[in-house]
Length: 420
Image (cartoon, rainbow, N blue to C red; front, side, top):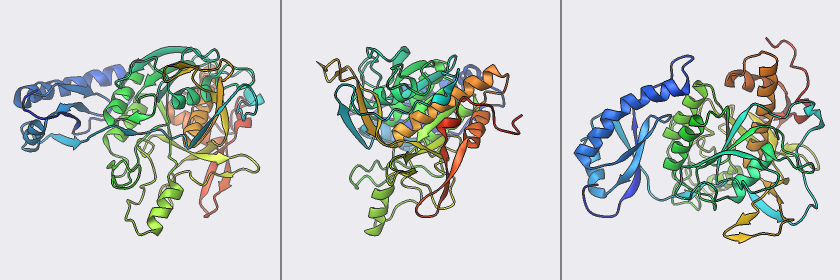
């Protein structure tokens, strides 16, 4: 790389290249790669940059010095390339609270007796998170890749907990779809630190692993960077680089389930103090993507109601599209964490947030996909989304927003009336 000074990770985007109707990921990725290759060579020659393609996002990531960034701003890569400057990694974990549970005491498992024969068998679910502990006795990880600086195999609490809600095989804390092909796509450090470049590369990696469903419980908020834990991410109408990658993943046949975020009360407090925010500032990216299935969190005890921290879009928005259990859910946690071996009986812990709710929904989607495939019905993201929403029950939030809550008891039963 030419120039002096400390390098930092940057993102570059080109004009969107939408998938063609019915185009596979392999064919689409090849077509985008052909478009990116000459730009990649130009970046190397004109600015000394070594760039990594982001196929689903239609862009690049790479390390650049300030001198190289100035050249990009001056237009050496051409008008079709847009610079998205970015700095350090940020905390991207979305579990609101997580308390380690020692032994097999109290729990709030979400497994439903209505499963019947459905276990998610034949369905591949990629968990894009902080890493899954493949040594956990009740998890069977069938593929793992890392797109962050930590290697695959370094587990995170957050990622292991979300994975267990989907695929735990424990009789006591059974995941919703214990028969899925579980894929670990590590896009953040074990402690939850995340960078948009790692995230975008992770979406490509999950599609390369032939994932049918992406479960995403991390993201970036659009709060100003000068606000505590504000990411300063810029996204207009769900069209940022990450949202674009998710939309393209759906168009090539992969359902994407994403956590809406845990920012509602915090955003309301900031607005009450006069802080100017974007209209949909509390929604995370990529849950803001137009084709993502955005999920909020429900409390289920002592009564069913919206969890107050769960993020919402603007009034009249359909985000999140559904609400799922997300409070005090027991699931798997790492056997080994931060280099130390934990008590062998401390295999489960409780967590709360839209992260957990998104994982529950991803598990439910796996069951629906399995059922649809067995019945000879379309397993497209659109069809699975439609059936999930058809199995929801109406719920009115405290501020009068109509929403839908996932009815776990309906899973594994006969298809909704009128389905074709």
